[in-house]
Amino acid sequence: MNKYIEISDCLNESIIDSLFYAREDKLAQVTDYEKSLVKKSTKTYDNVLKAINNVPDGFIEVRENLFNTIEKLTETLREESGYYSKKYYSSRFS
Image 1 (tube, rainbow, N blue to C red):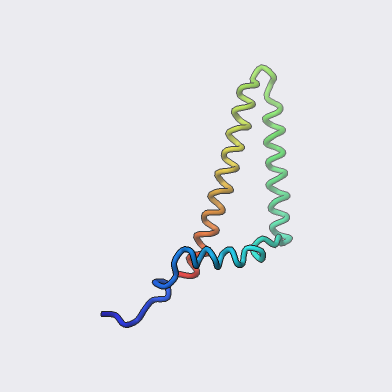
Image 2: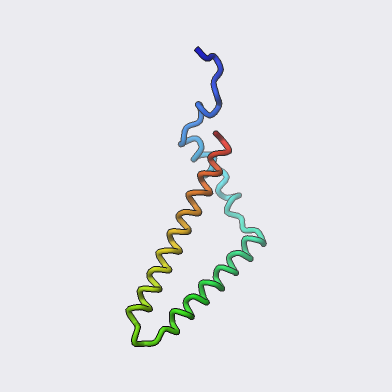
C-alpha cells in the first residue's frame, strides 16, 4: 500500500472549477495585446462581411449560406478556445 497521496488525487473537478472561477475577474482583464487581437479579428470579420455583401443579388441564398456558415464557424472557434483555455488552466493543478 502506498502511504503517499498525490495532490492530484485530492483535487476534483469542482475544486478546479472553483479555482478557475475565483480568478475569473483577473483573467477577464483585457491587455493592450488582447485589444489589438480583437481589433484585428474585427477588421477581418468586417472584410469577410463586405466580401459576402459583394456577392451579386442573384445569389441571395448563397450569400445567406456563407454568412450562416461563418457565424457557426466563429461560434465553434469561441467554444473551442474556451474549452482549451479551461483545459490548460486546469492541467496546472493536476
